[in-house]
Image (cartoon, rainbow, N blue to C red; front, side, top):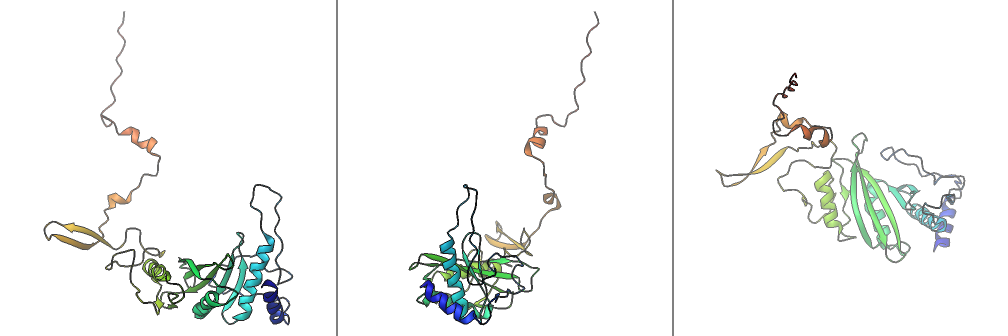
Length: 267
């Protein structure tokens, strides 16, 4: 399979021998060691230290060739292919190609990623598209994993992957609850970890630590009430010292005046 994918990728990219998949500005600007002189092969990683886990360079090369194959099949959506230091394949795609690429990964005979093991997001408010959405996929047929990344903002929705993997129902509800990312074509997009009347999204970087509302039981009304958070100024002062430094002061009579030393009797 790897030879077939290698031939397809080389046939498409041969007119541009040193093509680099340009990364969008919304992703991290990090240097990656995957783009070298030959864009179709990775530089082998060898460690002299015997305490570190050795890299399987043959497996890394096959995964990278599969990433090139995905990029060759869907060049409109794939923006970059990269290998992490943990020998994991990452496919960075545009938001409009989120569902087509996931469909390719799930149904293509050379992929068969029939399980989505994890879906999460990260919030970086300094970016134009502040949210980075990550799907970790597992291929039970080939025993390999891949990570698909895309980006969005507060208003741009993403196509739901529930039709591909059923467990994305709860995973995407969690992303919606914690980050406020909207998924279209989702059968039941509502909160899952917080209360339905909760305000805001807790994992956004601009969300206050104490929240906006508090919940308590009212003895007079005999029901649970929601009220704005009242955070007294006394609760905002924190002791940053070790407990061994200040707890020893709180003993019986700690604020009493020190007893005077008795003068010795003169003989």
